Amino acid sequence: MKKYDYLIVGAGLYGAVFAREAMDRGKKVLVIDRRPHIAGNVYTETVEGIHVHKYGAHIFHTNDENVWKYVCRFATFNRFTNSPVANYHGELYSLPFNMYTFNKMWGVVTPEEAAAKIEEQRREAGITEPKNLEEQAISLVGTDIYEKLIKGYTEKQWGRPCTELPAFIIKRLPVRLTFDNNYFNAAFQGIPMGGYTRLVANLLEGADVSLGTDFFAMKAQGALPAEHVLYTGPIDAYFDHRLGTLEYRSVRFETEILDIPNFQGNAAVNYTDRETPWTRIIEHKWFEFGRDDEGRDIPKTIISREYSSEWRKGDEPYYPVNDEKNNALYQSYKELADKEQGVIFGGRLGEYKYYDMDAVIAAALKKVGEVL
Image 1 (cartoon, helix red, strand yellow):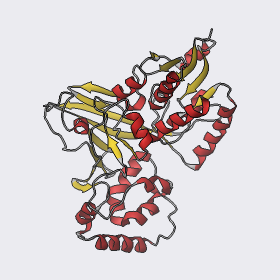
Image 2 (cartoon, rainbow, N blue to C red):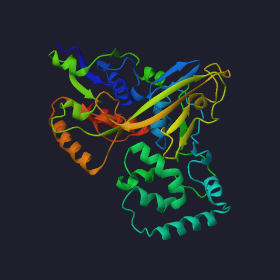
Image 3 (tube, one colour):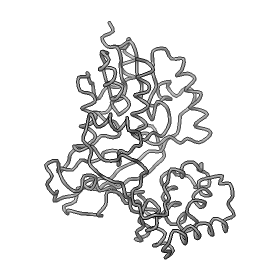
Image 4 (cartoon, one colour):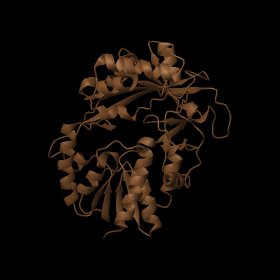
């Protein structure tokens, strides 16, 4: 007996938005997740009055006004602006790369001087058409900034030399000849007050939710309790890795509660030298200006050190390795997925692509429009 119209595998943003829209169209949904909580990788838990980003920092930003209006139906956002800091052996630099960065690096004062310095170093490197991340980075910001602020961090994050990484990865990095410290070129930006878990809970209001539930175990027991399936897990796992295993980067966190009010004075500090084993330290309280839900100053602080690693079975898959080999393997899996009757594959893992949060929401809304 099919009790539901949709079985939604994964209670992250993609699954939660799809569930909300399906329910609003009169459909009955069951949302399952193998984790003991909703919200996927945007899950936040409250510790010492601080909303801790359990799976790494998530800052909502978008230029899509429709997406912004949509999320604002389910949460009130604060005015947080992402202005990370780069730490290179104790030297602190502004991120994104802007006039503060160029002044600290070279002593230049005007945008014209900064542009001339970048062009000089690009010419000295002999780069005309960048073929990899290293060449693209030098073309954008010059050799000095690449060596101090990009190379070590990127190689720790991806576990590969910059010369072996595709150029498009670094094209997302903002470079400005102004003193603008806002990392994102986005019209709308902020953190949901009360944390992302509250946002996702509001999206899922009225849905049947089963946590700690494994889709594959459910499937092995026989008939599924729904006419259709929305699957947001790894696409290769769905097909039991029969064509091979897609590669991911994973992240490990070491989180500490500190009995001091302020550890680093900023939400995110990137450690860009190769010798420091972690990629960055997040100080969670500064995503909400050091205050709890009642607006009171929090006397303690919580930090998380992030360590990047190659994904192995049992780890959480974070970033797809979208190189030529993996993209070709994904296309083979997509051909299988397109033939799978009654199953929709969506989200970061289901589509094997890096998604910003606003793009996840836009994709889920688009998919709802196509199938409902």
